[in-house]
Structure formats: structure tokens, C-alpha cells
Image 1 (spheres, rainbow, N blue to C red):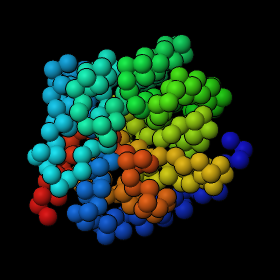
Image 2 (image 1 turned 90 degrees about the vertical axis):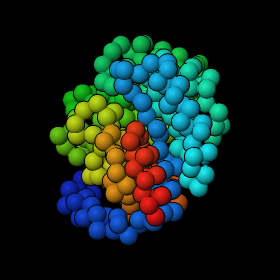
Image 3 (image 1 turned 180 degrees about the vertical axis):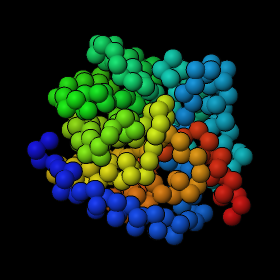
Image 4 (image 1 turned 120 degrees about the vertical axis):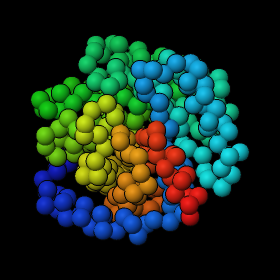
Length: 281
């Protein structure tokens, strides 16, 4: 961590930049941008009540999306629990939509490392394109950074050709510097994306946490030349909220990064909210 420093940005500068972004977000409101945001959604179903029939219906809503919404781009991915990956693989008929699965003892990451690694391997074998795992927040809080890094490194290896998205669970940290450090550790370990939250604790995604993560991504890219994606997730339900994350990426990383390749929004109800706004004009 010696080559990266949250302190050189500082809380005052972070808060100042957040104020600027809040003032600019509504200027980015347009039908074109709302459509772009819809194309970046990882449509998510992570409920204890999920079953094969409910997930099959969930997938069919994506399969038939263009029939009902010909002028709106489909979502980027479908995110489910590991046991439902084969269901999605069997039914999904939209090749560009990615199959995303949580793994690695989601949502708390508190189990044996061998189990985490094997779960990642199993969901890849089942056909997942992208794997969302959780960094062990306790290791970050306890400053056991090498443990957090080693765990993620092993899960990255287990991903093979699948992309690794690392959830920081930003609401678990008392200090903004921990969010920055967790971001850098995840990227050093090979994360293709860093993600705010599991959606299973409060606070979930926040604008400030996403801003700190975007700044960490920028620092990492300047140092390594590697391009890393950002995925805010958890409690994102409105177009206004989504536009804030759009503006964070635009201001820190560049508007060209607002594509499914480098930007995702993990959400369940956001799709309907965006569709309503788009059709309202």
C-alpha cells in the first residue's frame, strides 16, 4: 500500500468533489443517458425465496425485453445465486447478456478459504461469465491486508477466463481510507471490477463510497495502465440516484467509461424506474 495513499486526496477534497458532482448530476439527465444507464444494469435476484421457477421467469423477462421495449437497450447481466447459474444458462437467449453469480461465501466471506475457492470454481464450471465475491472486510479493518489480498488472489485464479468483481461492502468501514485501501488491494489481486456492496447490510451503495472507489481506480490506472470497472450496487432504485453514479464515473474516469464493459449498476427495481422515465420522455 506504500505506493498508493488516500491521504494525498484527503477528506476535504473528497467532500468538495462530491458537492460538485451533486450539482452537475441533473445536467446529465437525458433520454440517451437514461438508456445508457439501463444498458449497464446487472439485473439481480438474490433472495432466500428464489427458486427455479422464479429465476426462470426472471430470465424470460430479459429474453422478451426487446419485444416490449424495442427502443431501450437490454440489461448487461443477470446476477443470481450459484445454484441457479445452470437455470440461467439453459434459458437465457440473449447472447450479449452476461451470466453473473455471487460466490466466495457471499455475503460475508466468513468461511474456509478452500470453500470460497471451490465455490468460485463450481460457478465457473456451471457457466457463469462473471463472479462477484466479497473481500473480507474484517481483514481490512484489522489491517491484515496480506490476508485479504491472498484470498482474492486465489479466487481470481479460480475464475479462469471469467471476470472477477470484488465487493468491498463499503458500509462496514468506519474510515474512508479503508474503502480506498480495500479498492487498491482488490485491484492488485486481479479484480476486473470493484463493487460497493452486497445489498445485505446498511448502508449499501453511497455516492461518497463510489467516488472514493473511482478515485482509487484512477490512481491504480495511472500507476499500472490497467483499466478497472466500477459497480455501485445495493439500494439503487431511482433514475436520480443512477445519474449520480453516472456523473461520478464521468467526472473521475471519463464519459467513455460508461459502458457495460467498465460500468455496472447492481439493482433489482432500477430497470423499471428507468424504463418509466424513458417512456415518460
